[in-house]
Image 1 (cartoon, rainbow, N blue to C red):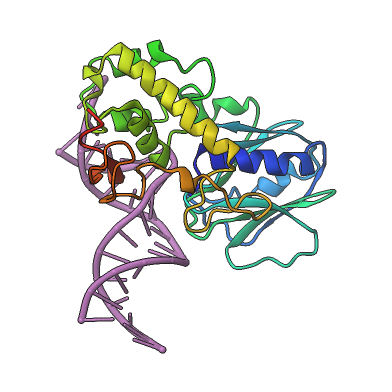
Image 2: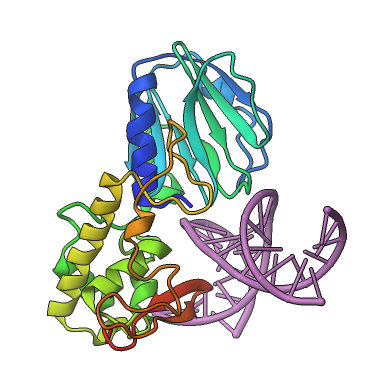
Length: 270
DNA sequence: AAATTCTCCTGAAGGC
DNA sequence: TGCCTTCAGGAGAATT
């Protein structure tokens, strides 16, 4: 399941193979993604030159001379570079055929999307109200403190809300809260500035460590070269409900916050 | 307005 | 072995 580190790994893997190239052809085998692939996508983008591939939160922006393709991997999406003549497999829904290589989008569950946006790209409704990037200087203690002020929501819900900060998905939210020693159910407005500062740093640490490892492979995630990530072995709480806490040895607790699996240590996280 | 619940989808895993 | 049920979840949309 692609989270920010997986999306960044994908971006870094594919960009060098297609940047600066002309998009010759768009092949849509199945347009039924989260939103339908625009019927006029080919007409909009064919013949244009890809300037760069940018990541914003978990969105991948393919910025052309004019306009951009907005991509999202959803739950099970992946993008990889293939040879022009490689036959598509089941669930390979979209190809972007560039002069030198083909970018192939695969998504069994079809929770992702492939959209078009004319300039300026960031004015698209999906991007316009996103919070700061978690690894940027814009994401700091004062920001999180301001965001949490007066909120009764569970802190885990807040850091997973893309309007407050992008890219902190379920796995890493669990891990960051453990690292910061904060109980995931704790009301956001009732956490001290010092502890929120610690949470900010934990988010940054967990995400950057995962990027270095090439992302977390759960089930079937593979990067743009088809290789898995190696962060899974470093997960402290996610997927470890009932097992011993790394710190205090007590069995980890599992609950649900907003339909998401939440794992934490009752003793270490307050 | 803020918070919670619903929704899309398919493959893996578990139960019998 | 095989069929059935349950679960996982990103994040916008709908609802409370």
